[in-house]
Image (cartoon, rainbow, N blue to C red; front, side, top):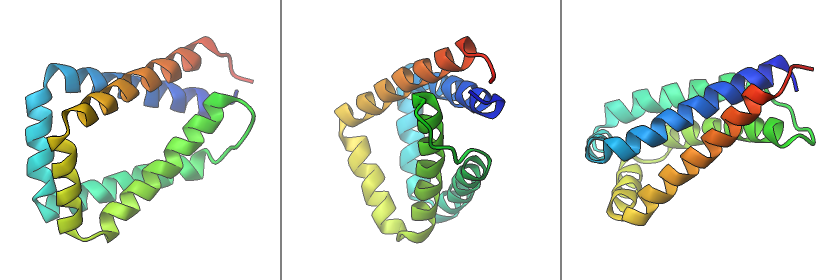
Length: 134
């Protein structure tokens, strides 16, 4: 595994773990923030720009499709982040607000996202720290 893949798997893995734990510990803060931001077009635009920039950086730095699952996951996360940022920039604000409100109203959705972040974060962190650079 390349040094870049190790770095990104550690970075994304630890980030997902911290976000997942934060969503558990501060559920109300998270839902309030999501509700507030989704109704503010300027905040959504700024967040969309940061998400797009992050996704573009990941795609440009790590667009590797190999047999190793960690490498593919890191590449896929980069592409998904870029697509998400672009969609946030291009979709009408009312659609995004409706989407976020439907997610907030679905308690199982929030727990599913949190569980997904924790599991994927643990996997990427484990693989990133146990592997050696090629």
